[in-house]
Image 1 (spheres, helix red, strand yellow):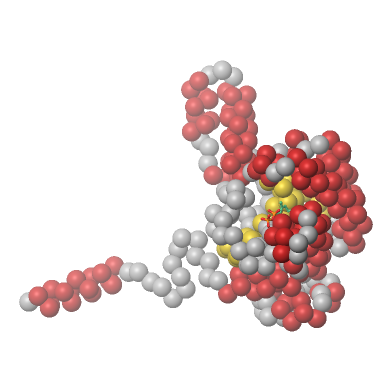
Image 2 (cartoon, rainbow, N blue to C red; image 1 turned 90 degrees about the vertical axis):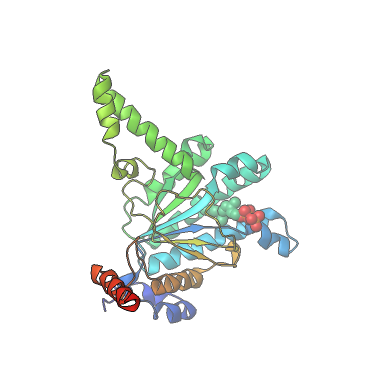
Length: 289
Ligand code: FPP
């Protein structure tokens, strides 16, 4: 068994350590993506205003990021603000989420650096308010040299839009290189393969998620990383996001490690041979005669 090479495992809490010790170091996922859901319900259950749920949700983000960094999880992607949130939530809630994001970044860049976390973003971030974009850029530049976990925040993100953007990009490139020659243009478009789409997604250069976690019990993907999660394992917990901590991330990874990933192939110990069918046919013929 490969040993964990992280030097920061000792910083896990005793509760986290007891789950962590059950993990197989060779099967730690490369990339975990989380649909953080349930902030509103968390607040509602306590007769609090929704904004307090979001505020508590931002606290959970930092707990989970730090645990991820302590176990050397290479990639962690969080669905922080969808295109649909931007279009369908009251303006005052959207404005609050933008302020919260800004203050989260300002308040946590120091800790990101202490934890060797690099910040990145995916989504139509160019549509976010300019003061938020400036803070985002500042945070990614301030953490750019870190080599531990890459924390990617999906902001103003929608997976279908991401695929549309990738296709637009591929077609634009094909037009630019075909110099008005329609046959050449068609050859370029006909030559597009899956990896050409992947290379033009916002996540270009990142491995696909191995594990998607969704909190608050909803069994849906909500337009998150649709292309990238083709073979991901999905883990749904009833726990609401503001109650989610590092130990729950480790529990999800333990569950992931118990799964058998098949990628469309057969499971371990399964077989299918021509002889199986042949043998069956012979038996049937024998019975008939
Ligand atoms: C879902 O709760 C969550 C969101 C709308 C976005 C996630 C936002 C945070 C965790 C807070 C801040 C994040 C960062 C990165 C600072 P919901 O409002 O849909 O909950 P509900 O379904 O219970 O109403």
